[in-house]
Length: 563
Image 1: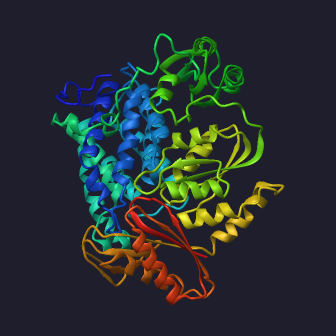
Image 2: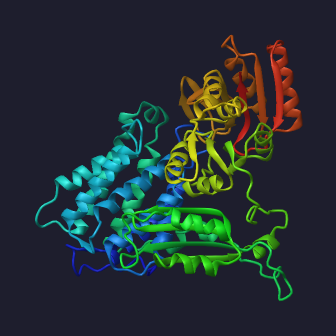
Image 3: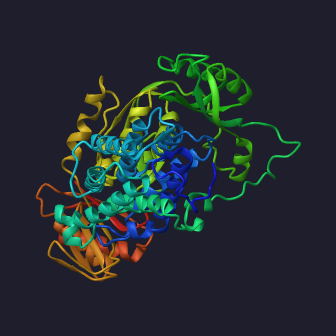
């Protein structure tokens, strides 16, 4: 697929084909990447934990990367590849909603080699409907509103003379206008003097679409943040005298062929059962008529030969894991593992910071998915974590409200265990929820009953730096202050982190039932800071049980959990 995103001509303005749409998608990804930091900074809280721009950018870039691996002029095929790539790469709530919007568009383009403006408009409408369905309780004043209002406006303005250019010009114009109205729909945006970040990300993507249609240049240097950070592979660790120990990481997309099978009724278990005989770390699922496979095996040739009886390959990636292993001897996460006995329950949790991750393992977490605020894991990251576990039931603790949707999307795809997403919206909820699991329970509901109850009585507060002046919740904030907040509520803003943390704990202990506090100290908290904070808490709350753990987390100087 060509990477040229400029110089689009107007040979047929009434027609959108796969080639043109691919260039538009590349342009949209590039335009968002160029403005990702601006979107990140549209954070309701004036702290450096905004990640919407990065999440949405990595989501669409995953789609573009998948799209560029196919050679097709068919709009349906190009859109399908983009959609599937975005589905697996979706990060954060905004990224999941974005992937669902494009998934709906892909359904609208099914069987379309080309589309006129009317067909494109209908596909956009399907995209909006699917995006809304992906959210349990849709909130207006968000990316959903921006998408809906812009599509409605563009569809209403369609005439027999409309072109692809005029359609997307109307769409982009109203998307910007709708974005400016979001603070009128959400008080929290108005109070923070920002527009909705998810809506802004969608606007930049559509602005990139529009720029491509107008023939405007978009700098290639701004696109593909992910690929820019990929280091060259060192092959020196595997020579002519080396022994193959770790096998091959084998991944591919298989297009089922009607000449070989009936794609509508094909059972992917035919593939998974075979893969169990030749490898491990298996992920295999069907999306439409395409099967995605991941397996660690010594014999990738057998895997490819077996699977080709059902269809043909769209993409193939085979990597020597002994090379990967030699680059970091201590990291054996990619090495094939002996199959562990299947157990009834297992736990996956999202965490960031060596101390936090270590603590979570100590209280029973089987697999840690690295991530958190500013580093949201993707749908595929969760699926890979599930694959490391051999259990009937997997409990997932996202520990961040912005990660729950990606976890649920992964759970809906994975079919080798019953995956239960426990909606822990912060680290404290996850911490007490995991510790309260009952591994001896007869049923999954009984196993997490104690967790759900314990999570109701925990309060989590955070301390971080302010990155701009603000006035929120009656608290005056100056750039550089240390802010203490609980959930979406600013509690205090002070010059020193220990003072802010002390005031935050005092506020959290206004609830009489609170008697125990766990403090995860971040990378920027010194030993002297911790001693001072402990002394303050002991002085102000002499009956409280206080535990300090070196969490090693970024962004937050302190994460404070009161029980």
